[in-house]
Amino acid sequence: MSQETQSFGALTRALNVLSKICLFASSFSLVLLVVIFGWLVFGRYVLNVTPTWVEQLSLLLVGYIAFVGSATGVHENSHLGVTLFREMLGSPFCEIASALADLILAAFGIVMMVACLELMRFGWSTNLPMLNIPESFRTLPALLCGGFTCLFAGTRGVLQIIQLFHTADASDERSL
Image (cartoon, rainbow, N blue to C red; front, side):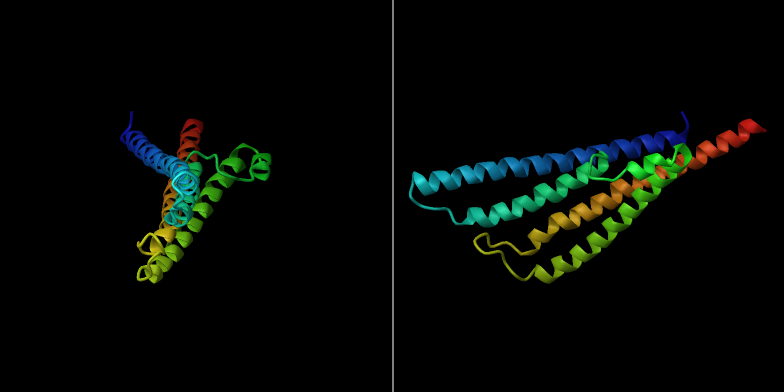
């Protein structure tokens, strides 16, 4: 096994671990959301004391569930995508279009990350009501999603391009 193949294998394993961490964080947020709504119902109807912080925390958790979970979908290539036209192109063009789509998605992730970073800076001095934490924690999941999308899609796109060139070089060597 070549050094290049080992490096790509190690990178893929590292990204798989990072994706599993994202999926765990999103899943944990979903479980926490169910638990706090259970506490809301119990507090309101049994204790007759409504916990008012539940609404703000649930809004925060939904952002983490959606954004961090979608980054995992990008890594697993199970996120929304229109592949009909790409698959109609045929084998060599399909692979090029797939790599190009991943690189465009990575560029979108960079734009999303930079814009969310600016929003985080803007909201750091304002606290969320009832939770008393900075408003920037609402923007953090979108920033993470942008960064992970860039990392996952960009790496996949670059690896596809390297594989395309490696395959082309190998076929040129065989023809000699």
